[in-house]
Length: 440
Image (cartoon, rainbow, N blue to C red):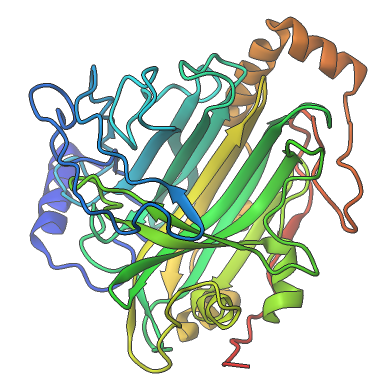
């Protein structure tokens, strides 16, 4: 597209009101920015605003993050922007680069920009966008998330880095991404996700790897988050497998404070967790799960069914309303990890949030065929970078040589491998049609 055409497109987007839904369905423009509006937010020139009291007072059952009072100034902002094809538009995808605990002295930047963005495979917080598919109607993009402790984390190997890309009503999307309790409004998330590489450890070590979908909906005066593990691997302190749910335990909850007024995630949320492989038994619908590098899933997740299920399970302190329309304020994909010399890389593309009728039309073949997307040179470079980092570390190199395909301990179901390099593309896993549940 000519430069003049790009500018005209950007200005048209900037001046138009956004209808409910994703600002960039199927990722056509791919503009990406980090959390804060001001590029110097959280530095001495522009300190953070820490708000008290917090959403959840200290001592609240299930409290995940205490009500921290600061710091409010960091060495640098670590702000990042990828202009995509709409450099003049205020609309953008939200990139989060958070390194817990965010108050740790090793973090150079403020929460959600704790560490600088790196080229995937070359640092802790690796993110990039690359072309995914070119059709007659134009170009589509994909997002690469490569989180690595094969590279040194300045907060230490047991920090918990969190790397996320998505759409947020409060930052970049221009409004809600959808709504619950109205089948004609967007609430079905469609996407493809590929597990590109996994570097794990051994059962006698604490380490965890996650790739998940997370969403936010607001009711009762509080943000309500839902996290769905699409992939998980690792072990806890007691040697048990890392998982949020099992066939006999439906998941977990936490109360999470985020008292930074300038952040898109202010003031925090009530969070519910469930593993993809357990939604069938606990919620009545199937969600595809990734188990090994090289696999791709094609998913269609009905947030109406998901939130209704988690609410019916008692995971929120106030049940989801039966009839009142509930705004969906965020849809995101993330990697998270902790542990020594571990890493995970994933790619997400073909992202959209649609109504039930639109989802049915897409299942019948409407729209681009994102199943055509295959790993390219970008993926190979990411995996090669992680391979080099592992080879440069004696512990990682030795561990891989001894246990190239060490499986997880049997927890009664298929689980991801502890340590595998990326392998050739394997068949995609697809969601089955979702049947929403009502109160049981």
